[in-house]
Length: 408
Image 1 (spheres, rainbow, N blue to C red):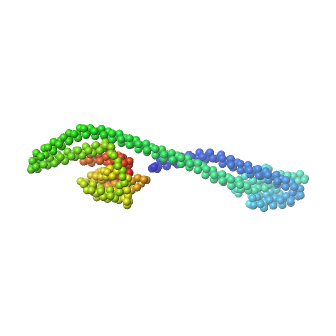
Image 2: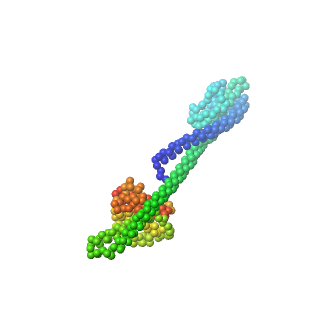
Image 3: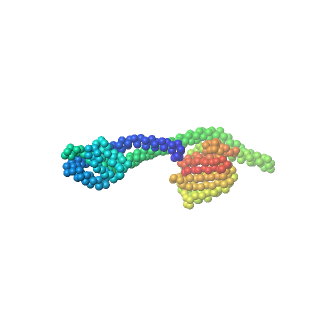
């Protein structure tokens, strides 16, 4: 399948569209995970707040120094960012692992979570009074690393899931697109074969008319000529010249009628293992009889064989080579390779080439762009290739030769 700019643009738009859809579908899941994580953090904070409140009341009864010493011991924990003690709203004691960083609000809140440049922080605060009724608050700010880790994991999984889902959709779309293209090509091939059959059916009717209207009178003409030929004066050079011309033209017309008949005739296929080395040895005798014989080279893998009908293959190669020779080629190169389970015969020539506007008609019956052509040779070649279950293609640039490729 040939990738075009249009196809790439469609895939790009579908990619963006798919990622956008799955982004919003997965966003709620990600937010739910983060919300649940915060709930767990706050639940842990409320537990710590109860423990802190009980311990602080007990220590405060013994004096402020005991409470301060307790908070400093908590501060020695690696996860704790800061501790603070307020008395009647004023800061009594504080310690922070980051100089100057003490994010205490004037409004009391037992448990709160907030983001900071240092990461996610949970602050637990407990309120109490000493024996004289003076209010105190104890504050502990500590890292809850699980929040950041879960959020990062949620973001990573969110992006991976979004891309994965979009990729699956794109793979399915690409598969369906490729499958539809393949089915379309198959449908076009079936339609083309149907048109070919209809075309050859029409040719059969024309050929039947030619056989009926021309062959029989032509045979009678040839018999009459054979009876008159002994009566000619062979000493008369002019009479001999016209006699030979008449015989030659009658035979030429008979040959054309025979070739017309081959277009409508069902050709039986007799497959066998054909050794290409011996095949091209035999082809030398066929090419020796050509009126105009260019230089012909051929190459293939050693001991290469192909399962096909030897007679039809001989006619196919001969027709293509003769067509190139008649067009004016001085050198023809035949290369045989294997591609995707098929044997490919590539026949290149250095002739004048084929005009672009003529290529699509090159295999049509009765269409020729040569002064002396009948428009049958390549049409018959295509029919024989189809009989073998293959296909034939041509590429050419005017003044730069032509290449026929036969896939069997």
